[in-house]
Length: 37
Image (cartoon, rainbow, N blue to C red; front, top):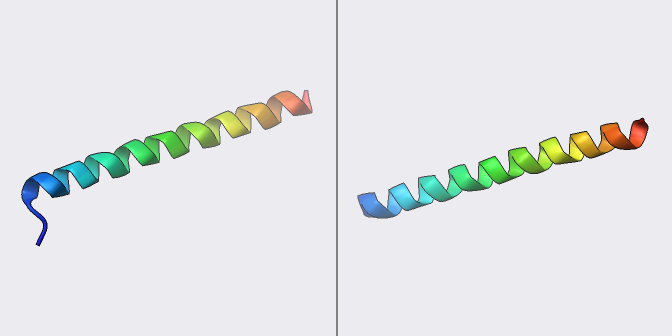
């Protein structure tokens, strides 16, 4: 079993990764929009 502290670290890591992916997707969309102009 994972310790509570380990679980918190994993959740924090997943949230950071999700935020990075969201930002990357937003940047990709913005880039595509700029290319279309």
